Length: 112
Image 1 (tube, rainbow, N blue to C red):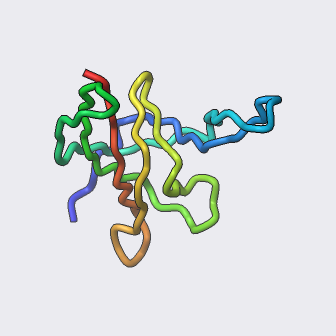
Image 2 (tube, helix red, strand yellow):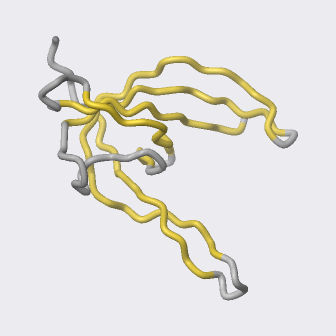
Image 3 (cartoon, rainbow, N blue to C red):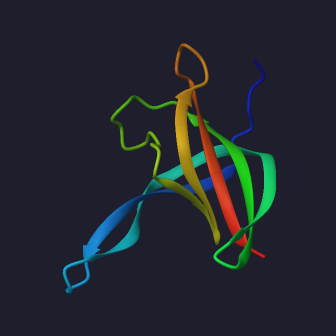
């Protein structure tokens, strides 16, 4: 296995609910920490969503391993932020038996 170049500085964010004062809630995002990663695009497509054309691109985001339960370990439903770009995490798995790297399948959506 070749050594991956972790050259993207991503902010790991987790969802947070805040009461809206009317019995509901608002979704916001709270930074968990900074993670260096290797980001590789996979497939992409354009779909019509609510009358708007949306570009969807799937990515494989590779990060250094962290034990289960560690705040440094990404989990599904969190997201990575790179400036204005947002990658929603769909799944996380160890790349190898030693758990040195984690493979995160993520999706980026952009209105076009």
